[in-house]
Length: 231
Image (cartoon, rainbow, N blue to C red; front, side, top):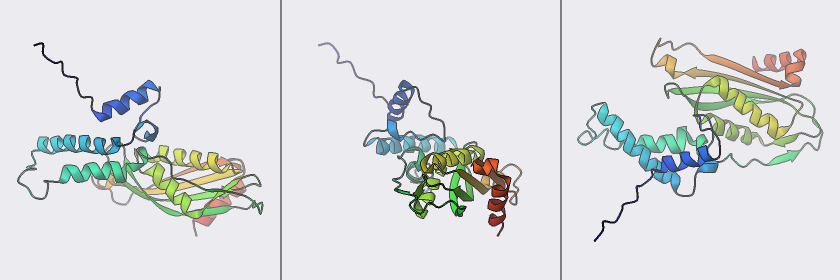
């Protein structure tokens, strides 16, 4: 009897990658790819990552069979990457209820500091910092609840990236959602790729700011925002 031809099994990561490239989209470290992941595939992806992390540990000559401390390390790290520290890549944006500006607020509003956690896409080391958001609404702006700023910050920051791109991505998301006259964002963070390796400088921080709309055009408004942060 003729041999039954085996159908090659395509890894779940490759299936997702094919959907993304087929749609002509990119899948950089700080991109969200939730639209290309089908139900049940996150669990499959976690299993695939676990098996590959186990191979990395073996290549580092770590005994994952006899060492009780590392026996489940690959599983724990895979779960951490997909469900926690890189979660912002794999889940849709959090639901955000928007409210009309009924009282026609048109004065500076500041939210923060919001604690944020991310990871450097160069070394996958932690980035821990704080974000402040300044909003200059107009009568047509959409307002969002205070907790939603924190949820959106977490969604954008929970991806491997560099801080310079993260602040731009977050400010664009908030600006497009709220449609204010102006939006300002400042992020201050510790980078463990400097603390833990390389120069091992534990005192250096990075501070970035992004100004949009009236904050970019009005120097007095920009000064008011920055002076209030110093308090």
